[in-house]
Image 1: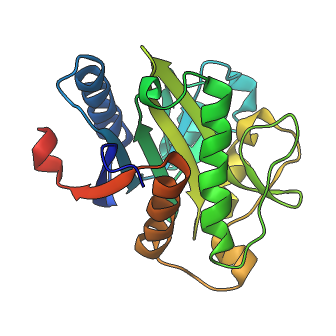
Image 2: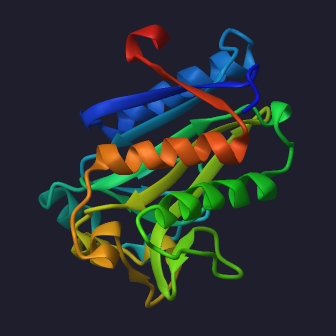
Image 3: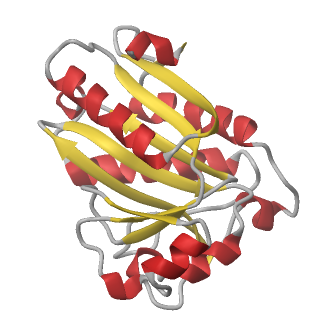
Length: 227
């Protein structure tokens, strides 16, 4: 590890409203860009049921109207990240790395491949052989997608990130065409291993892999530190 490169690990308990997490990310990106925040940050959390539309999203990739989704208690949110339509919900580990690529490598494609590597390595600790599919961003187990990635970069500081299905209700993905990929099969850690794993345990593995892949020393932090 590189001792002078620190990443603060912020783990939010329970379910965090998408808007709350988005506001926190924007606050921290501004602080990181302005030099008020000197360390990278990795936020790990779970969201209640929400569908997000990235910059490249097509409304046709929603399989239900916003009225029907609202009736089901599913929020729809347009965001500035790249990519198409994505679902978040309980049982899914969502990671928001706020990383200054100026201290790593100013290359967005490199960054995306690094995020994929973080998840591939973490999944390997559960006996899951995951990998990439040429032409697509994300992490797959054979022809089944287990994690989605969509990021935004402002002044070389990243936001948004990845969503790893742990014990996610995969039926909720029927509400969308995930990432705009027709007939994509979604899977989860639970489905691939045949048993449930806690978000905390999977988060531990992901945080450790994140530290190794990005050559960082990860230190736990409390939300109050950033208020």
